[in-house]
Length: 97
View 1 (cartoon, helix red, strand yellow):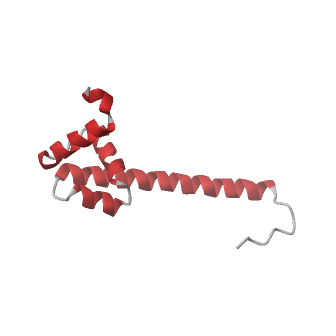
View 2: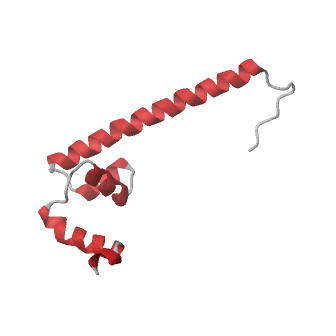
View 3: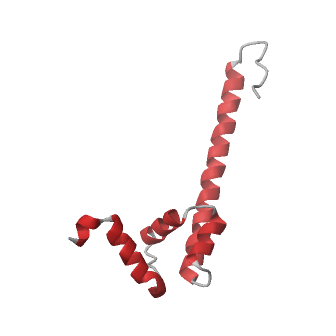
């Protein structure tokens, strides 16, 4: 549905207010994303939850969670290391040559 167009053109104050709301929303979104990232990384460091469960609960893809973990210095659990190495070689065939 398209909103009803205003009968008068917007004022600079209305535009400024909408811009301020958008910035507040962007700031809240960034903070909530940062908070979620810290929770995800803490859960992965602790090791009591499966990485796939953590990724699914976060709403992020497994690939994104793995990348965040590696960037934070969290290496795959030994149970998953062989699989992770295989996937890494498949993604970067020039490195395995």
